[in-house]
Image 1 (cartoon, helix red, strand yellow):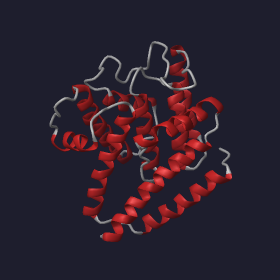
Image 2: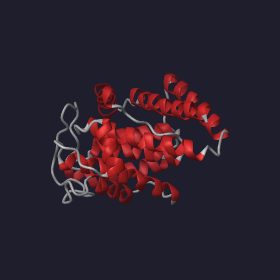
Image 3: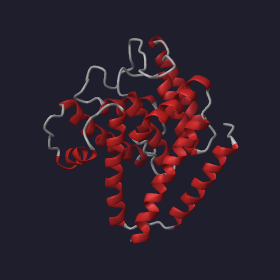
Length: 253
């Protein structure tokens, strides 16, 4: 059982109450939820890509998502990152429908979508070289250790007796610590975190690019010290924001 600090438990209690409230309102209005889903896919795609350096604005991202139109002055890679991220989200929804548990196959398939057309050689393939993470205070393990560590990560998450939000946060942090792929680890980590949340009926956590520095700092602390509290609280705060979007929309329905 994962030990929780008092601050983390307080946040989880708030989220539990909001989840109960949202569940009590189901079934939710179809058109309202459709519009909210579109907003969340846009925000999630924009911020997750922007954290990694994609320069498309949120309005440009919306145009690419909705119409597939290329934006002048932007690279093909940046356009593909938007399209691929949406496809990865749709893939998550299929996984949830099929009620599959976390597996390395799932992780590799998700990553393959993220790098499709960008780096097909390394898409869905564990790295075969050592890497450094720019701005991080820790060094990912030797590439020879990646297959074993990923196997252990999947087993740990599937057997971890903890709150779904805690599991999702640990999955994200430990995945980043292993850094199993040459590129696309951050986007994949955030997708996996939200997959775990969605599987358990929680709204997604969108990490906005504006708090990138704090996000990296909290991740660093989790990876170096195995101290997850700051990161779990950050994830709780973001889920809380998404809950508020649901309730704000439903109050107008």
